[in-house]
Image (cartoon, rainbow, N blue to C red; front, top):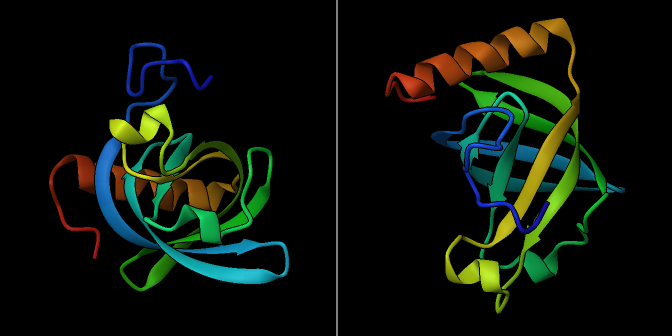
Length: 125
């Protein structure tokens, strides 16, 4: 998967540019990130200090994506790590690509609403 062109025609879900807060529970710790893009299938957790986080491909995460005063909660797995000095880091920000693996109907509806607003240019906050 790392060799696929990012955002190419083989992507299952279109990405929407969005700047939102994300709370991540990984292992026994809690982390706060910002996201740079989002889709129905996942998101990208942006950070300049990825080496400080214990996330590796395959790591399971519980995620709260903040939308106004509500959160969209789901389970995800890390599918891509963009580290400093990697070929991908020359073209893309550093951080973690995560895939949604479990989301209930209520949270899916909130995610869809957030994506619709972001695609139309509305602020997520």
